[in-house]
Length: 348
Ligand code: SF4
Image (tube, rainbow, N blue to C red; front, side, top):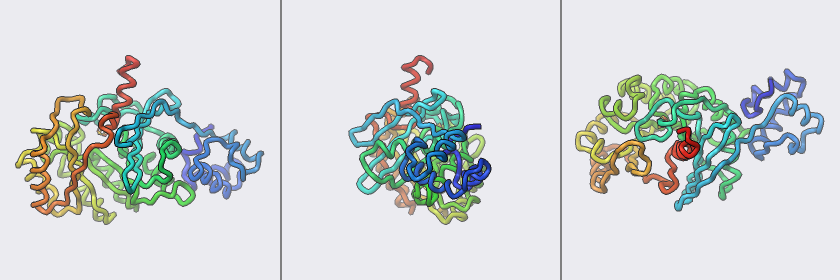
């Protein structure tokens, strides 16, 4: 079977090369072409003999997704819409700041978790992305952004990364590989809606990848109403899994908390959140809800609500940061561009 060569880790590629009569050491050379140079054509791998390049083409392909659209925000955030080989759309975002360039990657076509304020939730689930499709987003964006060096990657685009566990992990390992992209493990963040069992599994991988959990409410009742995944993994299970992750990786975990005006911003909410964070090596990232990101009728919080909530947590000794949404003018929240394209095609 001809498969995309970017679906293989280095060890797997060495084994596959051996099986088809190619010297395994060639895998390192190919890896460097694929990931350091970003080459998407075997014929351009100039230090590999021509016969071998032809042989690679007999056993493997390199599928480059088509960039359908790039939108650039006034804050220079860029959103990429990709069309995959089966015609599906995914999107990825590049987020520059003074000191870093972060790429936000998708892991699935659609999503089955239906978080209330996420456009991807309205798309439904179609399929997992292959490893090659996850990595191809990185390669394509790296070629198209003005900055030379990508400093961080976050798995936070369309899809729940831990619901595509194997392929997300393989992508992380390839990006981290010294012959791959060579991105530091602590420069990668897995963002999850709270799949407790997968978090526990991740804690046993021996990787210090950053973990970010979408919390958004501090009681089961409230959280279940906006994140249906909470019915399967209630807060008790989620916090237990996060605790295990912190112990195993010795990393601080981030909890994302979108401030929904009048919904999760009361004194009671702040108190419940501070109790939940007690004893955890964690930070809370507050994100004021942006009304343009909605498919439901949530309200933007007032300045007073935001300041009150932050100062309440700070007084309780919680490590808290306030992050303003990026790329609001180009609908940079995950799934919005795909949803727009679907609606325009009349399939949405
Ligand atoms: S926030 Fe993440 S997990 Fe929730 S619906 Fe959107 S893509 Fe899926």
